[in-house]
Length: 413
Image (tube, rainbow, N blue to C red; front, side):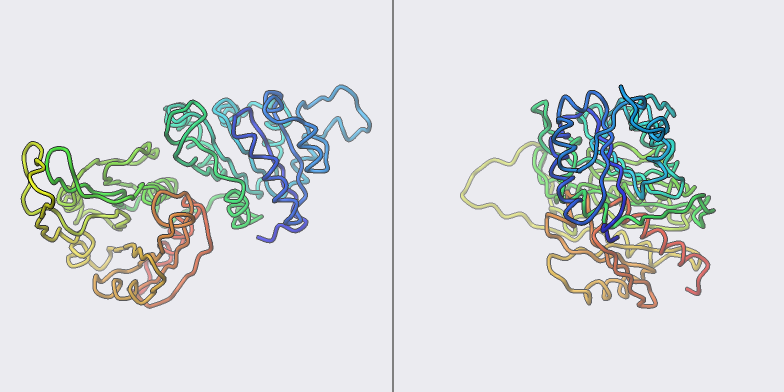
């Protein structure tokens, strides 16, 4: 989306991440966007109205009824805000405001304009809070309700928090937020359409696997599970019956998803095989270990020499195993992660493993791959049709990917 002359409402809540908002406003203005700031009263204790007003070149709105009224329009400003905006971005979104929005409470300008925003305009919500708060049942319930009712929730990043602890709760940096805004369509469907995934049985693997060397050491990788969990969340929202088989990750279970936690590749393989016959779609999003130690040692291996040799044996190929037995109505989908651009490798994987769709991406540690909240996917179907997606948040990428999956259903396979 070209931000030039786009009208963006920017809601700010009382979180420490509010210190990033002046930089975000500068970036949006530099792109040519018109920005109006709606802040809670408490948010102005973290960043001043003077700073926000100077950068946005607009007044900052907090209360529905200001102390003085210059024109008749001021009496209905909360309504005209919803009419004016092309998009509503709330960053940071605190647990308190998230609860108010999901409950329909509108006692300030931020929450009232959320209600009056026209139904075909996107709402982006960037939660930011302590990790335990974010994963709490109430916050996850409220976020799930907002997601089901037309909001795009961008999950926070993991890292050091204001409390001094580490966990999930950091708001993305302003540059990343702008990228997400740029890749969001300015007009969304006013009413949800019936999804072809409704009542479909979908098995999704996610996260890393751990292959034990001894009781305290293992072989693994940096997969966070975020892409697989995003797919599970989106599929469940479309009415699918989702089974999520995941390796060790620190992510909350998406609402309406049946979660199975495993550790090793062999355990994941056994769990998936339980659903071979019953599932309609299998998505292998997990970063499984290709090899495991040939011999597992009970206890702890001692340092007896300067070098140590560990013999490795191949693990089962979970995705290929499903593809070999799949029936005509079943769909097999995989991922192809590379450290350098090579689309041919993804096409080869598509053919060798008899997949219906492969999602190709590269690892750069910043915008795509492991442990980040964005991804750049190239989707290739079995007919060699190529769909190149831009840089997207992983939840938006999951939505776009499932759109392609829906096109595969009932197609000539």
